[in-house]
Length: 380
Image (tube, rainbow, N blue to C red; front, top):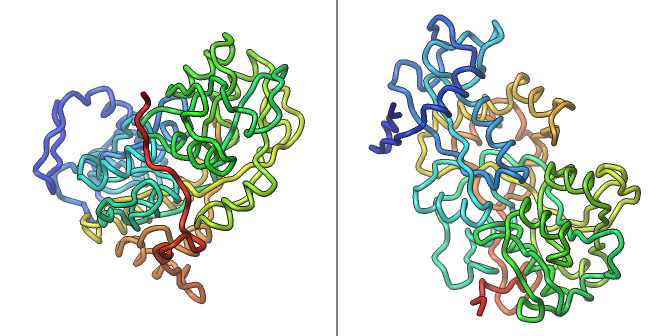
């Protein structure tokens, strides 16, 4: 089986299993059109970059892909079928996370993606770890979804009490291409540490958890929405706690970096962790390429904010339920709103009295907004 990406002249092979999942989730029945922008066209594929299968992005991206899809023959929305875009078949692709997603979206290897707001901002403004690179001018925004938090995980019986004590320790910083790795470098820099001052490893969350349980590492970084399924599983198998990100280092990070905020990992959200922990967080964005058609992105945005989609994402039976709020999107923007998304918000009267502004590029010379985030360094 092949899917035609008709607007891109690209064909993707080997997606029978994914198409089957989408079709089942959509409730395939008799064909009926709903008047969407893509009605009457050949099936159009949308590749959504997510994250590792053990993180937050992949299951969330899979739900969003299913919600946006409305294959030919799907039951009508008002009869319990898909409320997505006519003839759109969206696929959630596992990746290593925000950095890979932003890079592949800019290149056209993805059509849409999830990414941290700070990573998207750095890529758009050629700042932080993207300093010296051309601006990622294809990034545009559909929505800001929720706040992600940085977790620095240690065993409950670890003597470590602060990030400053990680010097010389074995620490998993996350895989290449992940927002976690960027966040880890950011946090370490705020505490006066670099990768060379640690014994770093670069593993995905599930493998990092196994290594922590087996005593192969002393700590692990992971960024995601609470509760992260991988950390829930780890906490059930091992007594854990989180190192706090607070005081002067956290204050400096938040003051100097747009889209970074003070946050807290709630108490009792992970088994056995009965105290909240101060940390930092950032928005998780749904991005799409700027060159996608306005009418298509309008329909995608409308499908995202459909009450049926919101109910699925907020379902408390999900590992990480998420309650979306459009006001999270309509504030200062890390990247420009796509014209199709902006039209949806205008027609839904969500922009009245609250015109979102695009965050300005950081000033030269380290003024507020100029994030002291080190670029990727050799591991030797």
